[in-house]
Length: 270
Ligand code: ATR
Image (cartoon, rainbow, N blue to C red; front, side):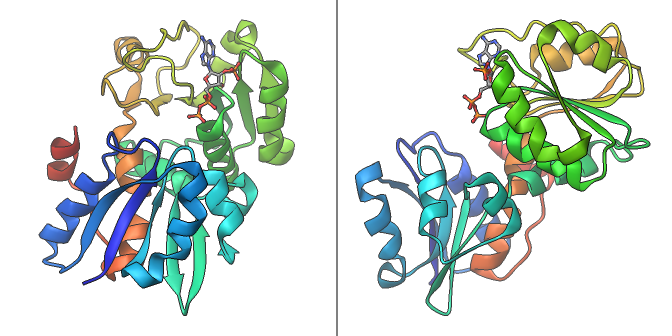
C-alpha cells in the first residue's frame, strides 16, 4: 500500500495526518499517511529514501519548505516563484514539488464566499511572511487591479508586493484605512490573532460592507478580526478551509482520487 507523510521538525502538531487519514478511510483506499519528525540535517537523506521506504510522496512543513524546493527535480510555477514547496511526489523515479498554499487559499474563498472577487479592484493583505507571499501571488493570478501589502516592516512589504507585478502596493498600518475604503477583500496573513500570539489591532470602519474578510489564522476559528468583520456586516471566511484545500492536490497525486472538502471533515479537524 502506498505511504505518504508530513515531514516537519517538530511535526506532532500537524493536522495533515488527520485530514489524509479521513480521506483514506472515506474513499476506502489502502494507504497510509504518517507524521515524520525529521531534523534539518536529516531532511535530504529522508526524502532521497522515499522510494526505498515505499513513500509515494508527502507534505513538507516548517522548517523544510525551502530545503524541499532545493531538492526537487521539478517544481510547479508557484513553488518556483515562492522558492518553497509543501507537497512532494515521485514520478518515474523523479522528485516533483509543488506549493499548493495559493490553490488552497483561492479554493477556500471560492467555497466560503462565492463572488468574493467582486470586480477585482482592490485586495488588501496584512503581513509579508511566507503565507502572505502565496496569497499575494494567488490574488494576482485572479487579476486584482491593486493588491496592497500592509506590513510593520516596510522593506518586507515592498518585496512581497513586487510578487503582484504592477498591481502591487506596499504600505504600513498607518495607511491601512485608506486602502480599506476601496477593498473587496481583506486577508490577515500575519500570525497575529492566533492563540498565544499578540492581537491584531486594526479598525474596519472604512471597509465597505460588501467586502469579504478572510483570516489565515484558524486557532481560534473565529479570530478577533473575523468577529469585528462580522459585527461590521462583512462576509467572513476562516482559515481552516485553506488548510483543508491545500491538502487536496497532494492526496490526488499520491492516492489517485480527488478528495472533497466537506463539512464533516471541517468539523473533525476543527
Ligand atoms: P509566515 O511565514 O507563517 O507567514 P512570518 O514569516 O513569521 O510567518 O511572518 C509573520 C508576519 O506577521 C510578518 O509580516 C510580521 O511582520 P514583520 O514583517 O514586520 O515582522 C507579522 N507580525 C508578527 N508580529 C507582529 C506584530 N506584533 N505586529 C505587526 N506585525 C507582526
